[in-house]
Image (tube, rainbow, N blue to C red; front, side):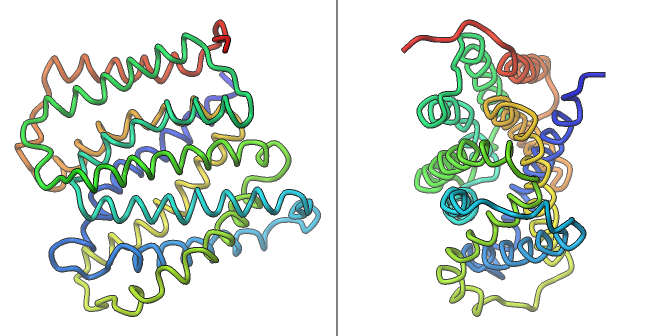
Length: 303
């Protein structure tokens, strides 16, 4: 059995959760406006922060120590991976469609490759570039073949999602060296602690304006976002980052448009998403090929 199999299963699981999240996170911020974006992030970050630090109680104290020089990097991870990332995502998602948001997120692998090459000198190979091109093409085309799936989108919302993708790319690169030194739970607990310090002053006002008279479905969506999208998905992703290179982890994001479209179809029975066709099957194959190629070694591109 491939020693990295569990890492690949972890990152797939995280992206399955993210694919569902586009629909479930948008619900509470919909027409009824139970929660505004920054208020939602306030709940999400503080809820997940509590769970991460509770999980630390079951760890040996000797494994939780952090070197003083690494606190600045942890703070930067909290800024880019929690505060900026989530602020831009939720604001953008409230302004655009679930499907458009998932399309814009496919820019992440290319951004990660560029950032990783600049910041930590991670090698860029022609095979990785080919994988990114194939995966990006497949993910984009499978959505373009879904008739009417971009209703409710906006350029401003799409650009915010794109900026969110760049912020998350910075986080993936910054957190990689920390994962080589410390336990993943320790790292993510500190990342969320620093992230919460940035989020609290930005989200508190909208938190006080939340309409708590929510139907069960909306309450379920909020719980899913806090427990699954934030706590569980972050754990799965950070475990994968500790075992795989950042480009491979980010390449799995190409699955999100497919998973997001499938989930919208399941929960809303929206015929505009389109049925399964040979074209879509072919484009889905390109996505999987792209993910595979990004994880393969190859001849490094010289600057």
